[in-house]
Image (cartoon, rainbow, N blue to C red; front, side, top):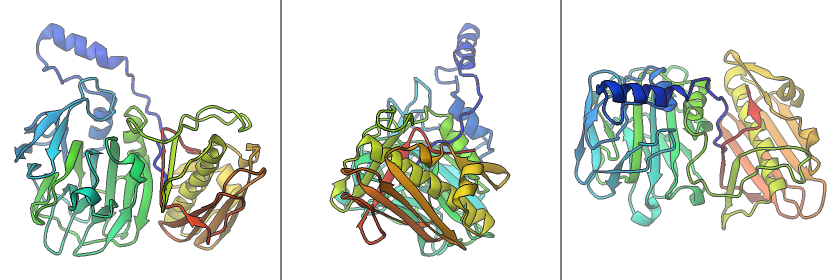
Length: 412
């Protein structure tokens, strides 16, 4: 599924250097006190703990908790693309290093975890899980981790998880923002990747988390040391909604720093369509080579998937093509397609919707373009396929990983 940013916050970036200059004149603020819009956006959502990790030890941005290094923790820079020129991160060696906080419990019936991550290697290569953050507890987990198949999984009970497999080419040496949420009453769990919901299920979980919040390794399950950088880790005692997550990501630089894949920017051959997005896709053989026209098609398909996901989750039924064009009111905001797919001169788009199931196709209008098929039969699960030689169906080559960063064809 596709990570995107959707909302651009109206914070004044000009205010940041002004505040820094005033601080310098008064000699009352440390070098890193000037906060970026990202930090302001996070604190505005009222986390119960927020650790920037710009030093090996320190205090939460909110509340009274602290954090300290265990093992070989160092500080690295430049950090995640959050709009702060002094951005730094906790660098973890994958052997014995992690961050332990004094935050314990605080998550009852719902919760959220956030962290910017930059993997220095793949778990499949290192031979062990990479733990991101959580409150590990036997039988009542709150654990976010990359496992040996390189998939990201979020556990909220004694077993079973919601999972997302990012494109492998986009993982190592690239910053990504992860947010996960759980609501044990509605049973909904969501993984957000770079501001975009990419996996959802009804697995729910158990309420009442009580153990210490750790970053980079589990305090209960041994050997799960993260190798790479982690920054801006936060914990909430409620499930953030999609608009909040989108706004947090949009308050960063609006892109996965160093993201791979050909950009879809420009309008050549696309009927005036323009976007700054980076689009990646993988199949069983590795990265799929996508030309600009095919990237535009994937963006349309991803946008339809995003809105249909909200229809399934919030309205308990899928939506028609006409509704996607006019706008669908979900959770108090209206989602719609940024462009009418009819303006794309290279593809014809179709959408069949009934009950909780939908199926969309991007059929090429000319030779040499791949066709695409997106099919969903339940909340949070979409089968994505493509055919390099034309029209695609659900039995064609499966797309195993997808990534879109920097723009979206689904807007509010």
